[in-house]
Structure formats: structure tokens, C-alpha cells
Length: 606
Image 1 (cartoon, rainbow, N blue to C red):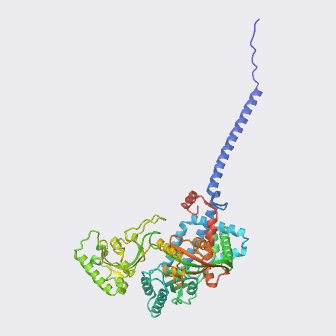
Image 2 (image 1 turned 90 degrees about the vertical axis):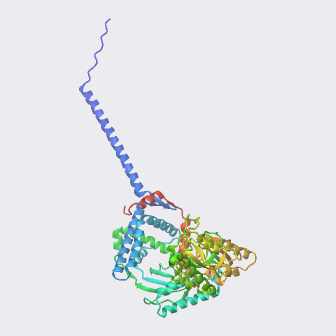
Image 3 (image 1 turned 45 degrees about the vertical axis):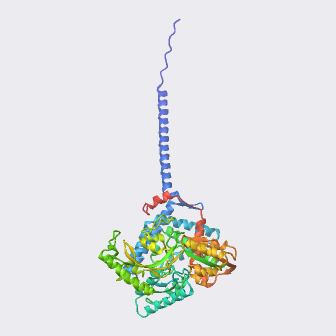
């Protein structure tokens, strides 16, 4: 049988066309899907990038996020405000209300703010979120009218005055550490004498220089304060009131005693009255955005409402208060816990009357050096006969060859041995060193055992300076040792107030360390904790505040009471800032530091 292969059927045109169409459809669909995927991917990348650069949180406050765009918007508002402030300052300069130098100072301050606009804006937003959250929890709110009033307040330029203050601190006479009533009487008499000199026709600046030369206490609140508003004047409220009550330029306030014990009086050399910038809101709004500026003003109004709430509760209201005595020991110029300190005054006799002529490679037989020694010996002989002449002699630049020490009448504060080196030991809190006296030979001389207070030393050769004449006024233990000694004495029966009069360096030492009634937020959180955790009638542990002072407290009694007027005046200055510090310390704040740094390096307008 024969088999024959079957002939394959030829495809028809209709079937071929169907296949081609299907293939084309699938290709089109596949291509479209690919394009859609690509676009979707690109869109996702764009959205993610946009979110990262704009909407992503750069910080959060108690889970409330702050975006980068929010920071940029606030920076625009701040820059607009700074720009308008600069226009205001220019107007005042052109009208002769402030000097060119004062304008330059204001301009420099604004330029500094502009350079940190983004980081400052973020800090503002964080602080505002903390306050806004507190306000919401305590039903504190502001109306639209209060926001409008806040904008009007912003557009009002406060009265400013150029202020100069002469301050006479209550300094104990070495080797004593604590001021006495006699020291206070002497300081008050000194202030009266300076005021009489000015009223007698002597130039204010000359008297101020004289007062600065005689008094070496720090933080006594004197000097040329510059052009300032009343709100920016960080001094006792009664003195600020007196300054801004002066009727005209050149008038002088009465002598007032400050909370730090110093006796002060002041004058003003210029007065710029308050005025309203009618273009403030339109100018700031146009340069940023109207809504952005109004949001800023709303937060300002909320902040003021919260401040009023705090003042009503802790300044005007009844609070639990404690009657307290204190002993304060300042840490001075040495690292906390350093060794003994000495109190000296010095003057220098240099070869050729200039310390620049002195070198470490010294030929003391040279004529210039023998002349310096001869002059030093002559002055030593005079001063041993009458040590009270030291200050006047040290101020004489024809005698004292170091102008810097002459400007201080040769007087130096209590200092430890470390400060006699060229550089001091590194501060453990900062890692930094400071420039020292570079007088190790003087250190060897003044730290000798048994040296009596009031001694005028023989001239001490310091090759890099000259011959140094030293008036030794006393030696005392390190701050940490002194506060420990005070605590030991009290724990072993010494009356606290008696020890305060003997050892304390606070202004209230004269009254036995009577700090008076202490209420919440009057002092730092560390001080408040020490006082309110100590049982009534007991003495606290020693505490160190900000590395600048040691404190020891005795709690005499406790009452629930309203602050007296003098206490309220003090509280108004400090309560809100102390309360705010506590609020901020307890807030849960997160910041994306790398992103903050990246934003800081970019233009605020970006």
C-alpha cells in the first residue's frame, strides 16, 4: 500500500490579518504600560524629591511636625522684618535721631541675623509650638483683634535713649572676702562723691573712668550702655524707670541701690521718641506674604497671652514661698576647685620705659635694666612708708611702664597660681585656655608661705616684662574649699548668718545672707530645687550654678503668700524666662540636624 503525505492547508488572508492585528494591539498595550510605569516611576521620584525638599519634617515638638517649607516661609517673614527695621534705622539716622556709629551697630546686628535666618526661623517655630501647645491645654486663646493689635505693636518703634551708668560696687577690703556695712557705707559715699563731681562741672566720661579705675567688681551694671529701649535695658526696674523718666538729655537720676548691692546713677545723652511706622504691615507683608506675617503675629499674641497668664499666677497670685538665707562663693578666674588665690596690685618698671624692650634673654647689667631697677626700688621705699599711695602711683603712666596695668591702678582680682602662667590650664567645660599674666616669678614670690597681707615686695624680675613691684593684699583658699569650710563650720554649730557675714560674696552678706522670700521661678532651676527640697529649718547641700558660683542655703520658714511690691518688681523681670526655660526643657523636641545644616548653608529665599 502506498502512503501519500497530506498537503498542508494554506493559511487564508483573513487569518493572517487577525494575527497581525492582535500582535499590534499587544505591542501597543505593552508599550503604553511601559510608558505608564516609567512616568509613574518618574512621578514617584519627583513627588518623593519634592516632599523631601519641601514637605518633609525637619523638626518636631511633642509629635507636631515642622516642615522645611514652614521654615522657609518664616525665614521670609523674618528677613522682611529685618529689611523694614533697617529702613527705619536709616530714617532715624537721616533725621539725626541716631548717630552714624549707632546706625552702623544696628546694621551690623541685622546683618548677623540675616546670615542665620533659616536656623533662627526653625528655633522660633519650635519655641512657638511649645507655647501654642501649652496655651491649647490651658484654654488660653487670642482673638483676631488681639492679632491686629499685635501687628500695631510691632509697627510701633519704642522710645530709645543712649544710657550711661556710673556704678560703685560694694567691694570688701582685702584680705576680707565678704563686704561689711562699712564697705557699703564707703561705696555709697563714693557714689555721692562722683555725682557731686559731675554736678560741679566735671565731664561724665572722666568721672566714669575714675569710678571704673577705683572699682574692679564685675557685673556691677555700669558703663556706656549705648542706645537702648526700656524693655532691652537689663538692669533693676527702679533704675530703668528712673532713666526713662528723665525729662531731657543731660539730666541725672538719683543714686539707687541695686539688687547686687551696687550704688548707681545714670544719665542719657540722646532721646529718640516712640513713633509708628505706618508702612510696616504692608512692607513686611509684601516682602514675605500677608498670611505668613499674620501667622507670626498670632504666635506673638499667644506668647504674650501665656506670659500674662504666668505673671498673673506667679507674680500677682499667691504662691508657696520660703524665707531663705544664703552664702555665695564665686568661682573667680580659676577652674572650679583650683588652688589658693591671692589678691595683689602690681606695676612694672621696664627697660627704656617699655615692656617691649624686655626679653627672656636679659642682661640685667645693661643700663636700661639698672635704671628700671633703680626706679622700682625708689617706688618700693616710698610705698613701704605709705602703702595707700599705691593706686595713685600705679595710675601714673610716667611711673608705671605698663599702660594696661596703669589703667586699672595696678589692681588685679583674686587669682589662682595658674593665672600667672602665659596661658591657663584648659577649662574642662570648654577645653579652652586663656591668656595668663606670664609672671611665674611673681607667682613664686606671692605664694610663699607666711607672707603677710599689706606687704610691699622687693622688685621681682620678670625677664619678659621688667621689674614688677607687688602690693600683696591677701591669700585665701580656693572657692570650692571656702564653701566647704563654711558648710563644715555651720554643721559644727556656727550660726549661718554669722558665717554669711564672714564668708559670703553676695550683696546680702551685710545682712547675714538674707535673700528674703523666694518664690517659684525667681531663681535658676538648680537653686530652686535646692531651696524647695530642703526641710524648713535645715541647710541645703552645696550646689554649683553655671560653673560661676557655689551656694549654700538655709530655709528659715515657709508661707503661702502674695509677693510684696519689691519682690514683684524683681519677679516681673525673671519669672517668665525661668518658667519658659522649664517648659522648653520638658518638651520632646527632635531636629534633623543634617537637614538643618544643609538649609543653613543655602540662601533663605531658596
